[in-house]
Amino acid sequence: MNKDEHVQGVIDVGCTREVRIGGLLVRLTGVVETGWRNKNSDLSYESRHNFMDELIDLTTMIADHCTEEFYLLEGRHSVPFEARLPMDVLSSVNRDNYGSVRYTCTALMAIPEDGDTEMVAEKTFKVFPYLNLDAPYMRDSTSTTEEELIVGCCGRKRGTIVASMKVQEEHHECVLISLCQQLDFVSTNRYETHLMDRKSVTIAVESHGTCKARPGSGPETKEIEFSIPSHLPPTSIHADRLVTISYFFKLDLEQFDIIVPVIIGTSKTPGTIE
Image (cartoon, rainbow, N blue to C red; front, side, top):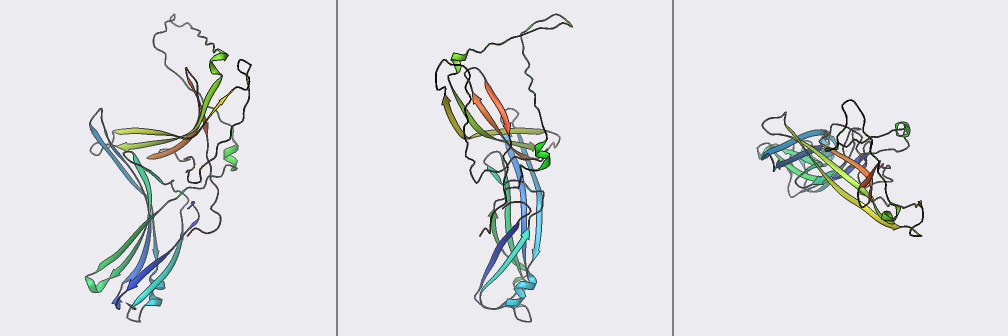
């Protein structure tokens, strides 16, 4: 499912005898959880945030399957429903020992004659937010810089020091370039909430190796196509989240790596998803 799209489903209820009910509700919830134990500090970190809670009242629809006294008739009953997802949703993620973003559809039917009990049925579903790469704000230019602290160099006080680096062409006849996904997780200490910890996991979505057509020649330009899996969630555009998704190209060289950030977008789901 994409955000701002409809979640559609059907509640199937089988009844072996007439039973009085109090109504039928469907709840759509979205929960992000992070948690782990830091091996260095031996501290536990746990965070949980309920960012979506949508309630759909299907009582009037289930009433068509009931008597005037609201007794559900014997037999099998199907009640369709749909709801629009809110704009501010997160991509579904599930990474053991790091965290998860889960969406759940829960059906609740109250049964007063059994002591106000509830019949509950749950089903999880996945959500990938819609990220339009043609949006105006995506066309703004951007730049990035990286600083590295070098320990061991000496220079005069208030002066300058110059360093140069020469890369031999023959050392890079072949290279490996990968499209990588990075998942960043943030969690707080269960007892001291001002203490935070971060963990990251990087996955190579797809990798390609390539070599020069003529070894020993000058620079060559090559175009390499990467196929994006349909289940790949888009780049996270919200900051300060417990779970953040980002992507980059990584060029593996012998002495160092070159990292180029990239944004993965999504398109709206065509047709209807059952």
